[in-house]
Length: 350
Image (cartoon, rainbow, N blue to C red; front, side):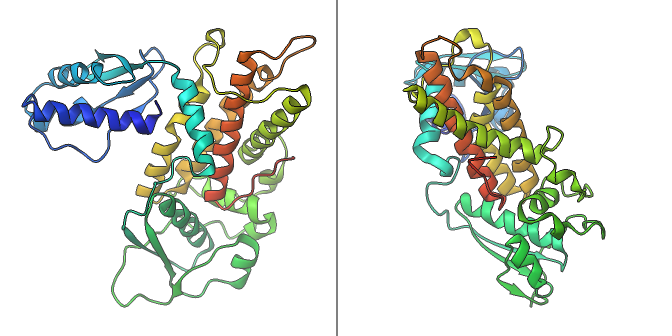
């Protein structure tokens, strides 16, 4: 069961509790599920009971207990426990890691995207400033991934070089006829000029910092070393593709399966599972920086275990190697899709 499917399962359990008269609440559109924090239990956790407690007029522990009983009866759920002040800890049947990887590979770079247009229409208006236009351009891509139709306008026609070098575009320019909320990040420093970095590095330099942080547009974004987050993300993607090529040379292919228990807790599965929620939050807050930072987390989690993917020496490819290779392939897919939403390329060779 994937995180998206589990979210629907949690909502289905809530509806069952409402229909049975156990809870009197409005069923929300989504239920947030995430990998448990260090020391937590189960495969996933949800704070839904804490969110609903006031509306239900009952303590969070009682709400969580009702939801846990309903969840335990759902197909694919092995058990549901109540922890802390009212969190739901959910343990799945079968191979949750394998299901997640299959879902990523089936959806491809559209993993985490809305399945259909939502009908939402969004107008983003920005001042005549390079960083504002780049943020709006990426926010448009992310919002579109969540099913929204987006129009971007600017106070004045953007400098042609912004489009030529960074690939940004706007749908109109000039003062709007009626006041509009303005997407206004902190301006980039006047020097050094980010355009000299080229499309990928310049966009990353302007998108990776939070909106309230002043971006660094120095040459460090071009450095191919571990201290450069953009390099780590693109290197991790290229590494996943190299592993697939090398595995093919060794005569084996990826096959989704559970990561071996001896590997211990796998933060990479958590990062991949969180990707849809990160995209939704980045769209909701018009904040591409949330996606950029999540790609760094995903890349670092992958690179920490990349050395275990292929057999060593005379070792024969095993089910564990095929499962790790499938996880690597899924990681590359998520990194490529995320970089695309930021307007940044994901080379297969680096």
